[in-house]
Image (cartoon, rainbow, N blue to C red; front, top):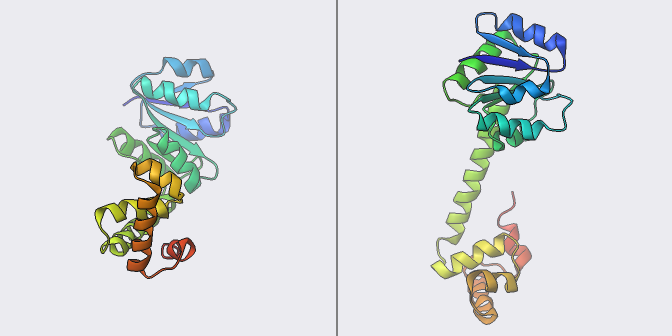
Length: 199
């Protein structure tokens, strides 16, 4: 796969060029050239002085490119943001040769690539979310299906009116379900109900 490098930081481009010397590499110097790139792996510095970076990413994806965003200080939240936009990899712009080559190889083979510390964070959060889901399933196991629907909305902060509208049931029915939910879960109000889901 052809690799295209674009950054406003010449020192970074020189560095990446040295680290990726065994690959077919093109270096772009103007932002408008990005829109002509197709079927390539594009390496972009996240600190690019462009207000159009999100638009560039969308255009690159439409042109069947794979994208590796490199940042001086990669962070978990930023990784989430980039991945949600369809980026294929995210890492440190000054990472070692072995990491950069690993990223290029992984993305070329249709995998997502993240640095180890961010991958670890993703795995921890997946476990936490899974544990929360398991907790919810366990807590709601003694509820009827209708009560489970109400309890889920209640947990997500819905008011009685919101629950009534969402489930297309009367306010009185909502109140009855909530009363039964509280009795079965041995809680007395919304605050004690909500506390069941906090760590």
